[in-house]
Image 1 (tube, rainbow, N blue to C red):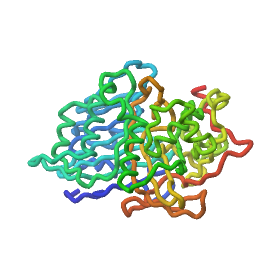
Image 2: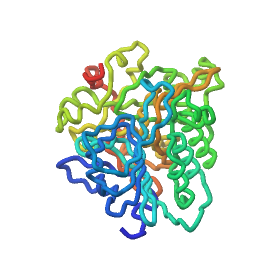
Image 3: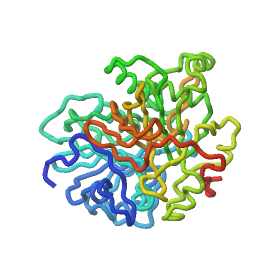
Length: 418
């Protein structure tokens, strides 16, 4: 690899599936480019270190962060494990999926929706946002919104200062994506930045965008929210998220005031989740099924908004989609908006739960990017055929098609977590 940047403006790719040729996919080997890799920060909910290290040269220094590490043996001598702060270790989790890959002349920033395990790159399909930034150790570049957000995010994860300090020598001028993170409640750092996480951070990002385009607040968005874990949803939480997705922080309002501004019938959110038949008939069988997380008692709770459940249409038929994404369509014609990609499932644990008169509660470490000013080409009101950001096609492992659950449909309930 030369110092030429392969992804100078940011792209979205999908992970490969075994036996499925796909020009829009990127393998882990291609993403890492181990031959030229000087060092790396890799974070994931689960890391299979033996499998990961088979893609990396033994001398390459690695900083790893995981909630769970799977390993039988390792001959790699250059691993530093980093441990984020947990106030409630058995409840709060580290779910962030980030790569910072350092090469001779640039740094590669990658946000993943999947884990660093073999199945996440072979039998379930995920998304990857990638952007390359110039690196020059003879210069110190001015900070911008992106670099500041990234540095704070790394501090939140307790990443060593020596790793964070390298960002001073990276030119982030061409960054257009916005970083959104979540940090568990109760820790030392979360108290300093409580309004900068989860759905409140999303509200801030969207509000800045609305201000730039002189958009007035109007509850007109359609949100297609897809994940691999089904959370404890209720109407009040959906309403709070819906308001934040328009750039409005609803914390100061009582619940009845929020309900009067956004009645239940105006909350246009599709919670997309694979059905039992979708998962049970997937071509890769049990190895793919283990990564879909839903509990029957959560879905059967009387407060759960079953009317918001929508089907998932994978890009490749009879496969399991493990992506975490939000496709937001706004305006009268619904042909513009924004897209979120990252580690956040569409759950209160990931995005936070607002509590009037108290601080929000966040459970997980999460990270993702928001792509603003996205353009949509639509075959119909309920079907997006093409997504374009910064003149580049956004390739997703699913089609955002607004098709609600049928009468006999139910989510796939993972027997291992019931």
